[in-house]
Image (cartoon, rainbow, N blue to C red; front, side, top):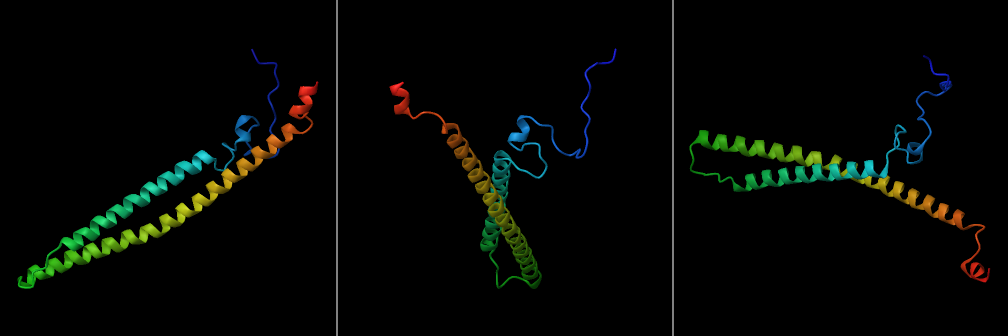
Length: 143
């Protein structure tokens, strides 16, 4: 038996979300990130950057701990130089990863600050609108 309730007909944009609570907090609109999304993204970026910095410090420590014997045979000296060169390349790779991560952290921080200030601003406006037309506390006491 078919339902007698007519189904909504979508005209125009099909990528727009259905209206409801999700529209109010932009959680389903593509390209709009919520404060929670930005916070998670920022935490992940900071964690990743910290891990890369930690790896770089371990590589630097490994470089510092290598003892090169000047009296070692030529092939031993060659192996030592290859190890040190490999560690220097690894250190450079890790250093090159840190700069983009820090730029991403700065970008997400700005987005998060902007989103929070916009949210606080709209909440303040709403609080101001809710007070318009209501009697002051002293006027209520007289009534």
